[in-house]
Image (cartoon, rainbow, N blue to C red; front, top):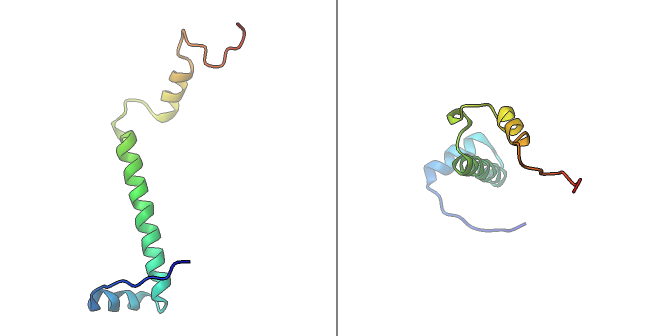
Length: 77
């Protein structure tokens, strides 16, 4: 576990202390949640949002699986 020092404003520190007596745990959880949010945003930006698609995800996958002319797992040759 890494130990580090950070500088934050007094008012922000007081607000955080109002939610938890354990400032270190509070900051750790806040960072964990922030990273999770960034990962979700990154994934949505990489793949686009599902709302923009004409089909639901199951239909898209089924369409890809039934793509005629392609033998993805056909080992009969």
